[in-house]
Picture (tube, rainbow, N blue to C red):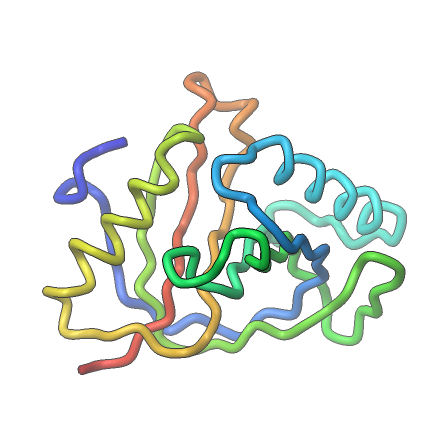
Length: 166
């Protein structure tokens, strides 16, 4: 990962997003196999319904809890893809609308083991000097590539943290 000083962090007004999701409750930190399993199930479901249209379809991970404040056994994670409004879930798949608004967006090119460092940089280094504070909307990651297709198996990811001015 590049140093935080070399990482691009922008404050952007993001549009609301309709997503289909599969939820996991429990530990997830560093568990790449879990993320692959959840996204695989979600993509199979979406594929059979004709809902995958890359690059318009976005893949996201939504974090419902602060892992520094919540017992890992009750952490909630939703692996998502964007879908048209009115899409109905079924079985393990639900739908929800992620609210739009102001987000700090960190644009990262990182290895799997560097996600924690990227989040720490955004929350602990950038945020305190930014003039913004976190608000109560959900944070999420938008995955911009398939790491298996990257020469170094890196993830190109936007980490989106909801903010409001101090």
